[in-house]
Image 1 (cartoon, rainbow, N blue to C red):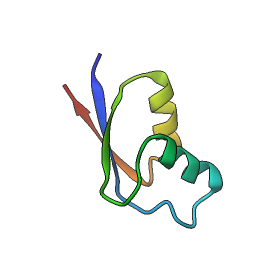
Image 2: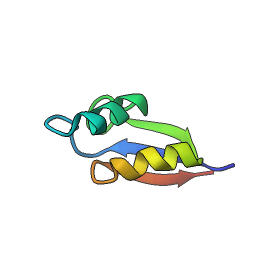
Image 3: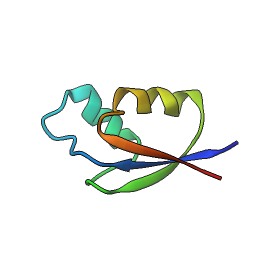
Length: 60
């Protein structure tokens, strides 16, 4: 299974509480922080909600 590298591009400050929670749960803290996550339905669902704040790359 492939993995996704998720990078926080925009700050989660002044966003909806649900969006801030998702950013924290994905393990993203500050702007430009990155984390490698499994490419599954749960991860993709979370990414969908905060797509305007992050950048996603596929990692093999």
